[in-house]
Amino acid sequence: MNIILLSGGSGQRLWPLSNGVRSKQFIRIFRNEDGELESMLARVYRQIISVDGEVGVTIATSKKQVSSIKNQLGDRVNICVEPCRRDTFPAICLAAVCLHDEQGVKEDEAVVVCPVDPYVEDSYFEALKELSRMAETGNANLSLLGIEPTYPSEKYGYIIPVSGDRVSRVDTFKEKPDVAAAEKYIAKGALWNGGVFAFRLGYLLRRAHEVIPFTDYQDLSARYEELEKISFDYAVAEREKRIQVLRYNGGWKDLGTWNTFTEAMEEPVLGRAILNEACENTNVVNELNIPILCMGCRNMVVAASSDGILVSDKEQSSYIKPFVEQMEQQVMYAEKSWGSFTVLDVQEDSLTIKIVLLPGHGLYYHSHDHRDEVWTVMSGRGRAVIDGIEREVAPGDVISMPAGCRHTVSAETELKIIEVQLGENITVEDKHKYPL
Image (cartoon, rainbow, N blue to C red; front, top):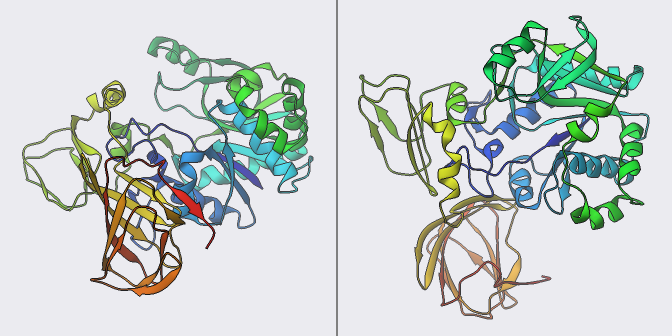
């Protein structure tokens, strides 16, 4: 089975745990079989592998999410990077061409596309395997997975099947309705459109060539910024006549808001927090190394990270986005392919950061024109290279690097460093990379 996972998101609805580079799928909030915290991304990947150990997984994503994906999954998946955001049809076309040109997937093989962040049972991925077989052996050009609705939701589009059979031809699609219209759709046997579909690779390649002038993967990537912003539903699904839907009635949740996100939490508190006996239906997620005390809180969510603190009624938390859009703040925490960084302090002429390097990883060999830097090693062991001179680093070591100095550090064990940047013009653009 070939799966394309669509990984997008702006990181606003689950602020302050999500931000401009950490969308909801990267937040570590679920416990795996070993009791360790894992993200939606890691959970979905683990479930896919448990159902099909031979599956080929490609994640279609933006440049800013690549580091987080590599941090959590390493090199276990293929990554197709959008040069810029162009909605789901261009993104899926680019990933499909990548599968064919770069990975050697044949045109008669089936490809399943689904979001990277559903909160589902393993039966969902068994249904994806069935959907893949339907696409590869059936007569339909497009096979969808329709979710049995549990209530008349205004958040989802609807698929209207011709019959109530487990597999049915699709009659029509309906956009996100109001509650009254949703009730009428459900009475007619409508299914939620969960954004899951399958096709033979050659089918989508032909559709892509019909509307986009390109020769191969590299050419399509170069032209990507010129492409029309259009969803896969509009460009393909709603125009396809030979289309069918597979009915799925297993557990499925879209954890797109704090209200739904906390429903999936296995425990009311993650991090340092105390709820007194008067608290009801209250969840706390605390990434800071300070305690949080909640007393008499009812139907509330409290979330704290380096990016800010949220205290909200659960229902009101669904309306967070416009308020977050008003905030102007640099990203204070991000996961990178080599580890993570947390901004500890921001002053006019200085910036203090905690860097965590994973074993076997290191920073680029680089220099800065407009700032000095000082590293203080807090824990772990590794090796630094300062202007071509290599040295071991250990707890307590302090290394000063004036502007123009070429430097890097790599970790033998997990390495924690406090980095102080000093200068009048501290920007992410002030960096020159060099081969080592």
